[in-house]
Image 1 (cartoon, each protein chain N blue to C red):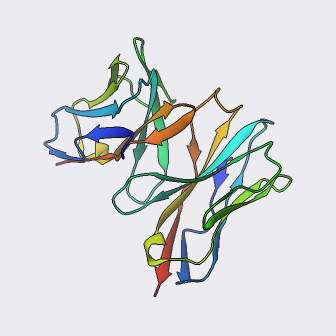
Image 2: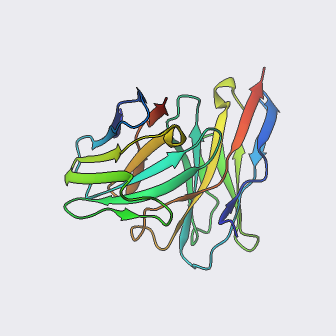
Length: 113
Length: 117
């Protein structure tokens, strides 16, 4: 079964609104989670490292005010795309480490109209 | 310079035949790990196989094997006896640093594999 779960799997929103995507570790505690972004037919690009109880670490070029990451508990990290625009439309996927192995969530497809 | 290079945007293979997907990497670290993932159209990332830089044997997992040539910095994925369900996007990825010290992965651009009946 799934080890890491994301919700929602698909979301459509209007331009200017904010969207929250959840990443949950199932049956294990994840002090660190990773958020990736994938444009259509392209590679996965690491956006940020989510650390439980502290601020996220963002990769170069990623707007931290645009992509808010909160890792408030050991099993949940959230990515909020603020004031979303059509260019934010993408596939967002998270990953978490369990027993030294990396597991990916199912991904969340965001479409901004 | 790109850290992971996959030079084949698309590959076609006949069902039951073997196929090799190319991957070259660039790192100055002595300790690193190489991964292959399969991504079907549903989007989930399915782990296939892992090779550590100090592993002397090529990794194998069922029908998947990794042809690791350290001097050439290549880590090609070989899929034997292709099945229709193997049609998907395949990504090569690298972790730099010792296992357990870093879980960030750098991905290549991927190869779209199509298995023909």
